[in-house]
Image (cartoon, rainbow, N blue to C red):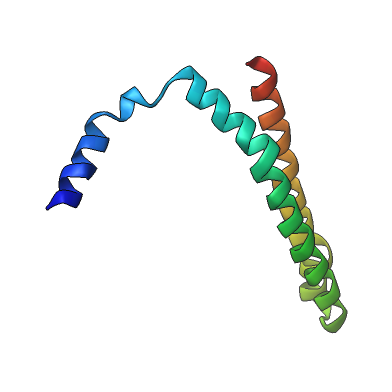
Length: 90
């Protein structure tokens, strides 16, 4: 029962936590901490994909060598540019 009470209180007062300072801090944290960590993981993932592409043939080789690494890198690039733009507006 107490968990439901806490959940309802948080839902009813969530607006108290959505302040400009919290939003700015979230953008800065995402840009400075989360994005670099995601890039490290993505680097390891794309390296493993490229290594596995040596064993593939045809479209699967293209998928592992080019397509998936480009999708991952492109998504992180886009997220980084968006975070930079949002941080610059603050």
